[in-house]
Amino acid sequence: MEHLTTSGVFALDGGSWEVDNNVWLIGDDDEVVVIDAPHDADTIISAVNGRRVVAVVCTHGHNDHVNAAPALADAVDAPILLHPEDRVLWDMTHPDRAPDGELADGQVVKVAGTELRVIHTPGHAPGAVCLYAPGAGVLFSGDTLFQGGPGATGRSYSDFPTIVASIRDRLLSLPEETVVNTGHGDSTTIGAEAPHLQEWIDRGN
Image 1 (cartoon, helix red, strand yellow):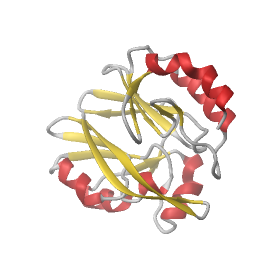
Image 2 (tube, rainbow, N blue to C red):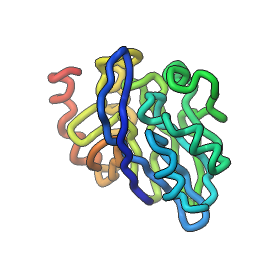
Image 3 (tube, rainbow, N blue to C red):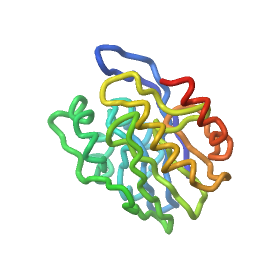
Image 4 (cartoon, rainbow, N blue to C red):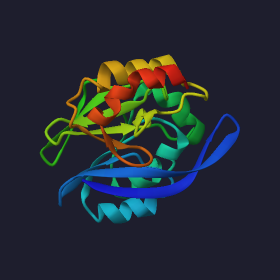
């Protein structure tokens, strides 16, 4: 597993924000899956370093997670995978280029002997997904779960009760020791976040 950080702008609803995004490469010396393709394709291409890219998996369709996806996919000859319910967000950034395939709840993406299970976790975005590698004890949570709580739900196509239900029902049931690698910021664990569910609900979005 390799970790990159790229910087750029998140734009939605007429606003824009400077953000740092995490990019995760899962695989070995021969092949990888790239989780999210924000801002800067060249940085990710350099990290791929000639390996076969099984897929560019987008955890959701916000521009700061998909900006570089077409350029990356074209450069490494890999399919872009996105949950169909996030096509409305994808099309805001790439109206003339469709994803190459769809992600579905329960789908398994295989790379270098590792299985990544797709968990549909709507709330931050309607088609948001997390990727769980049970063999490695790692969850890639996109913008669904962070150190300190749920992803933001104050903008279009997001909903706070929905993200709380996704986290409670789909993520907090994973083993406590599961490492949560997020779309922004530091990693955490399921065990570190689970006790705070009621605090998040009381705080609201």
